[in-house]
Image (tube, rainbow, N blue to C red; front, side, top):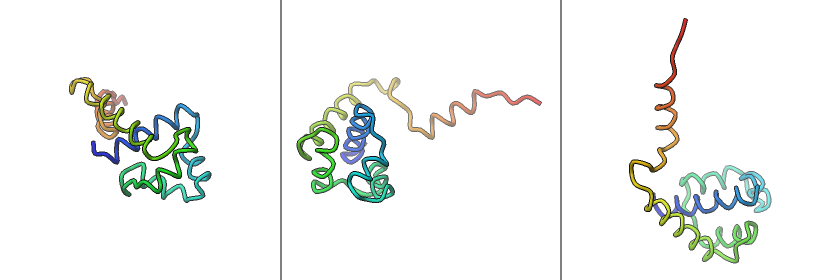
Length: 104
């Protein structure tokens, strides 16, 4: 994962903790949900200006607080042994589908 992914992860965790949805955050930022989605999925890179706008809406003081939370996410992910680390979503779906039985 790169820095942008860890920032997105930190924001996702904060959204969960505050019981806020991504579309609600986009609305509060007065931006299209697609724009926020591009940041969250890595299609656009996070910048301090955007992070400074998001920070107070999620209980952080500034972009620096988000960066600190992203660093904590990185440390957490590094502490998980590779055999226990979460699989990417697509890989999870593939592994689930191979467990399914097809009956006629």
